[in-house]
Image 1 (cartoon, one colour):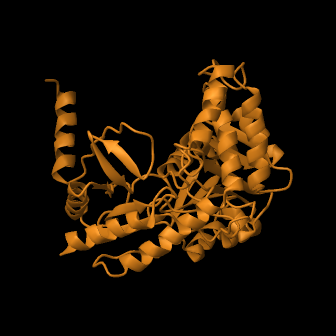
Image 2: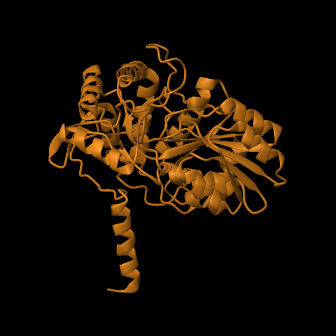
Image 3: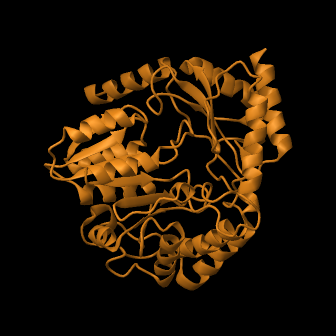
Length: 397
């Protein structure tokens, strides 16, 4: 065995000893409240399929029709010959739907990771500065590092600390980057105040709304007709210095991501963003599926109404459990367990009861804050929530 291989094996053994080893589990069914995993059916609370659209027959049918017409691959990058009519149509529809500024344009990416790398590296570079919330998703951090701009992280949602850093910066260009809904805690950024700071200090504000798009927006009332437009819409924000990114594999139930922003920003990404220029376009069949999904997000607000009712039921039940449940009005409901081993133990105990809730450990979350990341979907029922709460109460005894 070579020294290099031995070092890898030693590091892997160390991870396992610290309770940080991760295992892939084999799913053999469509996404839903119940999955076939490793040969048995489980009640599932670990998906970001917040509206239950990943397995919706209408979305599946749209993908099938798209495959029949356009094939299963784009064949080239968007700037060569891989930009299809369905790509163009869904970019226009998504930009009009979230409307982060007047006359916004949209741009598709194969993943949110690629989209955030594109945004940050295209807008800032050497001599510039990126200011990022300390609990941002890893892809925003990686984007800042790859941009070669100076990278400053401020304490979570601490706007006073952020302003001090902005005020003391002599950078040529400034960019504030934040999750809208923080993926492990479920809390929401103070985007209105962040936008005010961006205006005051002449900065871009990049908003990663991966977990807000399709879920947040106007009040979730059946018949509202315009729900799910995301966190900016919920807060009534629009501005030309906003750069909005959302993923399409969570509430939208399909795959990929998009950026919506002013024409100047989108055209800059098209012309200069390496993760756009040098990537084969996503299959047009997925754009067809997304068109169907967006219709359902717009036209079936009862999905969101049910989701929020489930969340309310969970919050009531969780108050009787011995573990901390931080405030969250979103589909992400963390159960704080502290140690890695305790998170694994509780997750394993639930698994014995055919309930799957993943244990989340560092480096995904800070040391000492291991948790169960419980996520709810419109495909869950009230009985499902009660089963989870009863099982956790039993594990806690």
